[in-house]
Length: 125
Image (cartoon, rainbow, N blue to C red):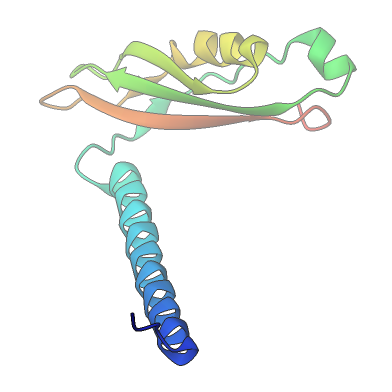
């Protein structure tokens, strides 16, 4: 039985690592471009009326902050039709949802979906 030389194994390992590196770069660039498409693509709708969320008093007093991400569906008339939490502290998600429900967007010929992020920073609000 023939055993592979150590130089053959090192070459194969190096080749596999290079292939994985190229794959990772491709995947990262693909995900970055899809994020850009969400914010500036055909689904982009400009906010014309925005209500700031009310920071929950107890969280602000205890300097508890965070980021809330919401997926929102915007109806053709510009009102927010549906809100789905993507991430964040549940109490902050409630405050963000109450505010975003009141937002208005530029009208369009169809419904669109986008993701918004609200930052709750205790010492800034």
